[in-house]
Every structure is written in structure tokens, then in C-alpha cells.
Length: 113
Image (tube, rainbow, N blue to C red; front, side, top):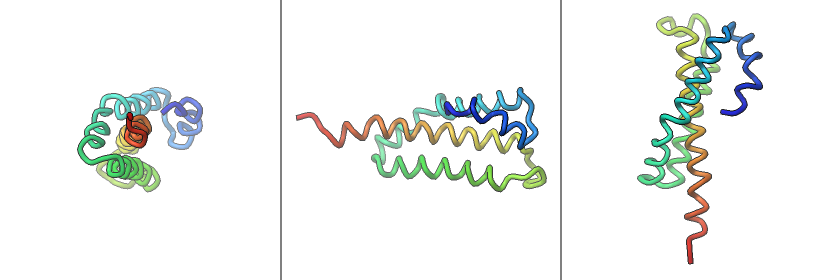
């Protein structure tokens, strides 16, 4: 989430995005990381750390694969910007999974005596 400012210009040049578009993508990233941050905690409580980590990795990989296969003409029913917005929500949500797991797993690995 924090590396967006470093890579934003290269990303804008590659996809032909405006500054407003890149700000929108950053907002989508923060939406996934902040507004959806309750989902990793619920998954961790309900399914445990391994399943929550796998789900976080699947969400990240879904965003990554979609971003790799996205072209201006595929799929026809969705614009590149809409697809990138979805990918960035996935990236933000996945980063929340990694933060939750990193915070709570030490508590279970080293229980209080």
C-alpha cells in the first residue's frame, strides 16, 4: 500500500492514466485496506491463521492475474480503469490479511503462561 507513491508515474505512463485516475486507484487501494479490514479478522477468528492466509493470497493473486491479462479490448464490457479499480481493491484487502495474520499469529504461537 505504501509503495504506490513510488511507482505511480511509471504506472500512469504504462496505462495512459491521468493524475486523477491514479488518485482514484489509490483510493481503491485504501478502501480495500481500510474499509474491508474487518474481513481478515473475521476469517482469522472463524477459520484460523492458515485458511486466512490462503484466502489473503488468493485475493492478491486474483487481482494480480486480472491486472496481467487486462488489455484495452479485453474484456469488452469493462474499461481498463474499472478493472484496475477492482484489482486495487483486491490488493488493499489482501494487504489487510497479511497485517492481521502478522499481528495475531505470534499471540497463538507464544501463548501466555
